[in-house]
Amino acid sequence: MPADDFLSPIVAATTQWLVQAYPPARGALQRGLAEAQARQAVTVAALLRYPTELDAELVAVSGPGGASRLDWITGADAAAPEHAEAWRSWVDEVVTSWAACLLGSPALASRAAEAVAEAQGGTAPVAFRRLTDPTQEDQRSAALLRHPDVLAPIADLHGDALRDRLQATLPA
Image (cartoon, rainbow, N blue to C red; front, side, top):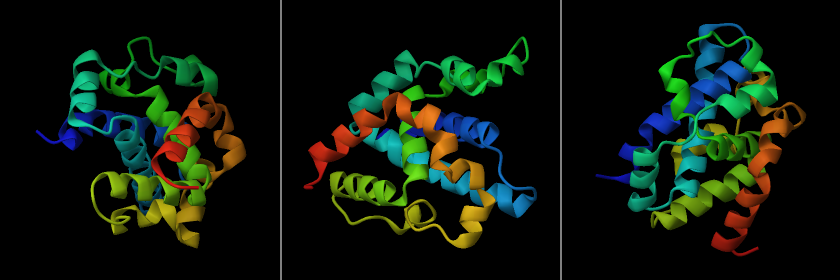
């Protein structure tokens, strides 16, 4: 089974968490564009964090840890219901932090997408264009999700580890 299959629940839950924590502009189109950007960032981050099938299988068995600390950092824990949704247990803190770094920096996102493509034996996929080369509409739709200062508390959690990983996988 490909690593992507094991990572699907983490990608879905972490994307959902990001979109809820950093709400998009009003409207279905804006929500869709913001969600697409978040999903691309989370996918790249997850593939960097869990690069092999074994890594993906291990996190699928052990679980990624959940959203509790992220909620506390963003203040969302005060608004969380007593019995939070089950999907929240599939949020991965490191992947969320790395995705926040990528959303806040298209240049870093391009480098990360290249690293993922290189690891998979190809070139940077067009599928990550909304992440690596966002349009003005993408930017407007996900203003909070793309703002480095707003993302900083989450991005700073594990951002150094992402930069270290990218330094190790790509020439400077």
